[in-house]
Image (cartoon, rainbow, N blue to C red; front, top):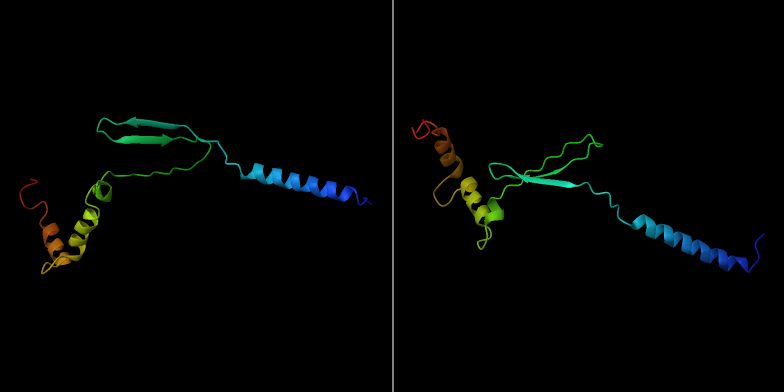
Length: 111
């Protein structure tokens, strides 16, 4: 049986132990894999993180195009794609696009 004097000491010890464990468990893990980087002959920038211990392949391809290239004209890529998919005024996008794509390759430009 503990005495009345030991109870505050034990409570303080528990407080510090729980606080220390909480602090240790909240620290971020710093086991980052090294990032290898190179540029191909065609100018494509490649970043590779190799972790042989994990049997996972994760590929992410990012293009420097579309909204990433809008610059001082935000929304230009979305506006253009909207015209292609929804049409504008009297132009019906689905019918117009079908006509254009059905003649691709037959116009003599590519042959």
